[in-house]
Length: 79
Image 1 (cartoon, helix red, strand yellow):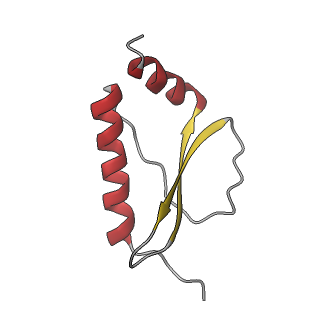
Image 2 (cartoon, rainbow, N blue to C red):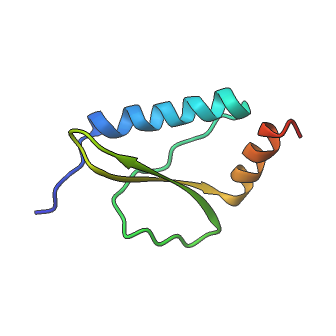
């Protein structure tokens, strides 16, 4: 049986990430289905990797599709 990741860790992380992007870039993002993966992305995607320590250890990767990444960068540069 594979170990599962408790949603009590995932949901606050996702909510915080979305809140930061909204406050910095003024964009509302939607969350896809979180999952555990071998990190193979089919589309052009920018990734932010965050190390996690504490009760749960590992890496969290936030993938942002090309068009959304460009929108975020443009808003952050006041474009």
